[in-house]
Amino acid sequence: MFPRNLTTLGRSWFAQREISFITSVCQHYPSCYKALNPLYVRPFTLFHKPRINCVLRLSLFDNFCQTAFHTSSTLMETVDDEPDVKRRKLQDRSGVTTRYERRRSSPCKTRDVPATITTSNESFQSEGSQDEPEQTRQRRIHRFWEDLSSHYYKEANKHPGSCIEEDLRKETYDFTVMSYNILSQYLLEDNAHLYKHCPRPILKWDHRFPNILQEFKDLDADILCLQEVQEDHYNAQIKPSLESLGYQCEYKMRTGRKPDGCAIGFKRSRFSLVSSHPVEFFRHGIPLLDRDNVGLVVLLKPTVHRSSSSNVCVANTHLLYNPRRGDIKLTQLAMLLAEISAVSLEENGRRSPIILCGDFNSVPGSPLYSFIKDGRLNYQGLSIGKVSGQEQTPRGQKMLSVPIWPESLGISHRCQYEAKYQKDEGSETGDKSNESSFEPEVKRKEACIEHQFSLTSAYSHYLSDDGSPEITTCHSRTALTVDYIFYSAAKEAISVLPGKNSSYDGMLKLLARLSLLRERDLWSVNGLPNEHNSSDHLPLLAKFRLEY
Image 1 (cartoon, rainbow, N blue to C red):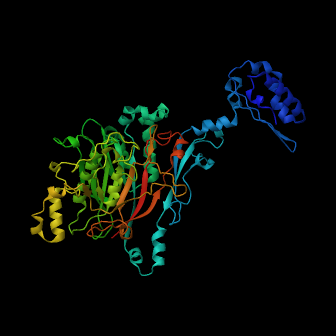
Image 2 (image 1 turned 90 degrees about the vertical axis):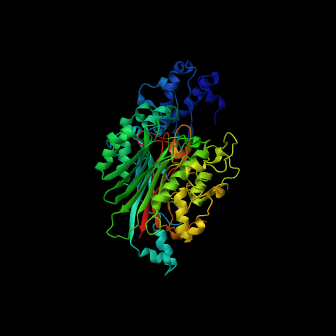
């Protein structure tokens, strides 16, 4: 409608001419003339600001005229003069609080409502007055429950008299498990370059701990698996706070100089501790295992009045971060699995169901992730840098050695302690004479490692609505999924998992989980940490059913 010169207002002599023309046109529209008049009567102020940006839009329709000005703050007398669009952009950079809602979703779909960022007034009434200006309100991450429990009932209705219908008549015990890397303050300050996008005040522990504690209260999990738990904070604040909420806590600090470790907490009203087993991955004299990561395995007994109820084996770990040392990651994982194998074996020869949580520093679909789910990994010709999948173009082409770890570690290629492995094999086959001739060093020359557990992930790792990857950690360098809750799949899920040991009974069913977000949702609220979410990881939460 108007010449393109109008867009160069303040830089071209055509602009003043166009402003005069528009002003004369808009005399028939008082609202427009009122908006334009300050520019018309004070042209000197405008045309002597060389860096000013002014965009004028005019639309005439049914005697209606609207104008919108985007001007620099140098022409604004008060903050209230700031354009609405700019206010919205400033609001987009504000902090975020997590909201949790319970909703039922279709069993055929992983989610019925996409994970979104909510800005409803209802979300903020607990934060301040209803008269609070709109631009000061904080936007909140909106995560909801994905209810999967109805799936079992629908399957039972489809197949009357099936084993699924029989399972529904069994006695059950429902409980929730949370896995959460809470971000050690020491590591935060030691890697400050990862958090340049965060205002400094929100990175202080005095600000972060109340938020983390509130998440514990809101999620109210029966079992907590925490990583990057700093020792001094654990002893002074975290453990006392959890104990006041009814939890009993077990803790294993990292070896070496790093002052953090892994913790497992469980509600005393829901479980009792049978045994606790810390796992140190550092080994003197083995160059491959010169890192100070740790794991923690506990055996818990549900507080039900039945002697036949099964124990639950819960493991928690934080594997090495270094993307280029996949050999160390696999060896650390094998050591943890060996401990799980020893702890989960019950006196009757059956195994307790297993829940494996932690920060594995590996992405979905990577060789390490596939090894956990499939129970087998052939690593012949596999590059060390590709094990975790953290780098799309891994540096270096060094291949995994065969075997990966030395014989002196005492762990077989089946991820069991050597002595325990031979004993188990003999008891399963019933022929101990043949077991005496077994030569583990021969099998360990094969480029293959195995484990006997039927493990699957509580999360699908991709959103059903658009296929976007789910994100569990997000800071200035990356946004990935590295945190997991693996669990022993129930019988109907085991059929799709090949190569499983028939002596293993999976007795856990996934009933629900707390939804995760896509990357753009997190960056729309300035990533992690932010004002209300005080870790660079999101907590994972799943609800399980134990049958006995």
